[in-house]
Image 1 (tube, rainbow, N blue to C red):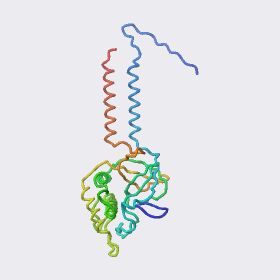
Image 2 (image 1 turned 30 degrees about the horizontal axis):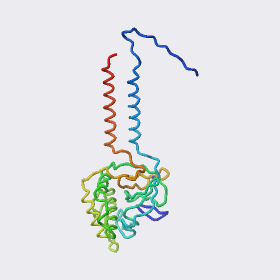
Image 3 (image 1 turned 90 degrees about the vertical axis):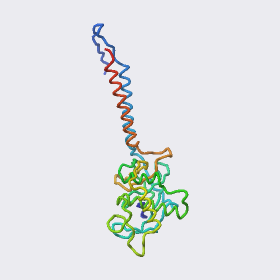
Image 4 (image 1 turned 60 degrees about the horizontal axis):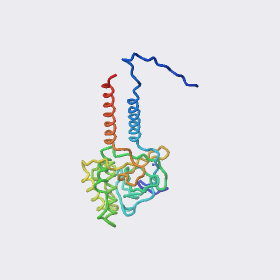
Length: 270
């Protein structure tokens, strides 16, 4: 969640061995042609394993809020039953090892601060709620033809929908039980246009899943901070590990190669 303080926003000598020569009919030379492919196979397996592991050395800095894609200090909701003014609801700008990107907050009750360097681990959506948000990022990301105030409302609604999906499984902000609901303060009701648009995002994403979005899991001196989420990397910079299905395909292919070579070895006359 975005807040203001220090700017939190809700990263020896050789030994020679002689081998006795066998009878001419049984002698077999060392099988170097087979050993070499096995060495290459091991290298491929190691490469696939390293590729499957997410990078842990990246850093992230939240550089600011995107004023054209959200609303600042004008949105009220109930957080755990208490009417609360949201400092910022909408897209935020980040710097990942020098690459500028746009993301949304994932958690409602965890802060992240502007102009602070975090360690970040990038990964794909791996829970049902994150995959639902991932579907929204892929199919309903606010943008053209919306402009001006309409785009600001859509950005705030998109963020509100993400919070409600993550915190309350997207229950529509109904008053009563729930970590986030529409405001019950008569003098500060939830913006009706934002609320309606957020409910629409939730309705459209119901029972929808995708692994399209990228999750930035952020840490400060080892302490977990606010997670962020954005669209896949297209700028050539740090990216998430391959999707699980891709990793499975890689290992399946390599396993088939290994089995094939072992069969060939077993069928070769000695």
